Image 1 (tube, rainbow, N blue to C red):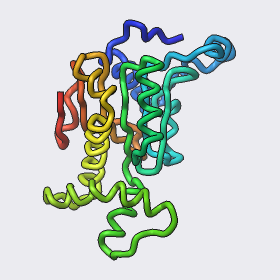
Image 2: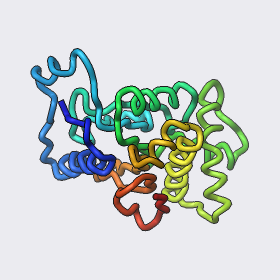
Image 3: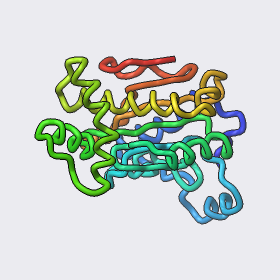
Image 4: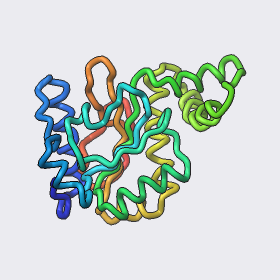
Length: 218
């Protein structure tokens, strides 16, 4: 089992990104995906990261980060929008399972972000519960536009940062652990074509510098 007892948030982040580099290069190792690992984690789990990402079918976490059973505690919603059940799941991964890293994973061409932009432009919100998803993405679109950003990639970057900030604002457990250096939160954007996960936001000690087009908070 991946030993996270003494793993720092930085080490967890580096482990995650190393897997993504292997995936991008086409040299995955497929760690922790055999029968022995299945037996090893049957009784308990100690994931080294909580991954909160979009539900998009092209964002299969264990594939794009080249990890296996028991490595990632995954929570996914369309547009990585957040509600009480999401916050509770993330806090469980950090507080009960001890994961030192939380990652918010957005991606290029996000349908939820696109739907929010379209609803603002044509004034026609979607029907059913999809409307709730769009309404939760809308603050990010409005913030990006208020800052003069209209490009899809800039709006997406704002939504990733907004989700990271909202997570830390709403979860006292997580914000306290980040302040104490026991955990970190990173916002990544996944490129659908090249498979690269780029850092767009970071809260926590010793994390790498984010993409130049984004802000970093330590």
